[in-house]
Each structure stands twice: as C-alpha cells, then as structure tokens.
Amino acid sequence: MLKIVAIMLSGMAVGVLLRKRRLRVVPHAVTVLIWALLFLLGVEVGTNRQVIEGITSLGLEAMWLSVAGIVGTVLAAWALWKWVK
Image: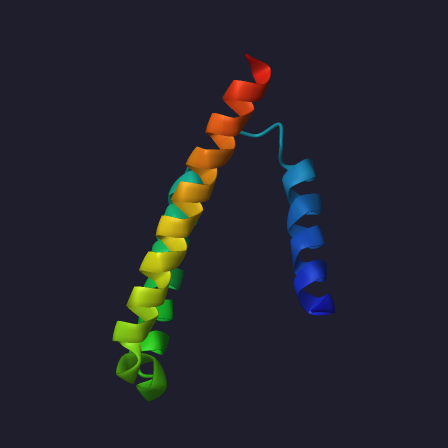
C-alpha cells in the first residue's frame, strides 16, 4: 500500500514540475493504458473459474443492487424536492 501511495505522490510531483509544458500525448496515453488495464482485468476475471461459474448469480445481484440504488436515488431526490418546495 505504501508503494502505491509513493508512486501516486511521485506522479503528482512530476505533474507539478511539467505543468507549464503542453503534453499532448498524455491524455492519449492515459486512455490507452486504461483500455489495457480493463482488458487485463477481463483476462484475469475470465481465468477465474469461481467467477465464471457464479456469473449468473453475480449478474442478478448486480442488477438488484443497481435497481435499489436507482430507486433510492429517485426517492431521495423526490423527498428533497418536496422538502425544498
């Protein structure tokens, strides 16, 4: 964990040092790296037998969590609207 924080802080330091320069390649590099990380995450999940065998129950659980989150958000927004008015 300390290693991750040190890497983030060093990246921030380099960003502060290079902030006056126009680095046009950085946004593109970040996008490509995020795609690569997502691909590698998919490979890692695809090779995990337990995840693949439980994909239907995981999908249903994710669907119910999403629906509950949406319903809760709508109800909270409605209650706030009534309270403000």
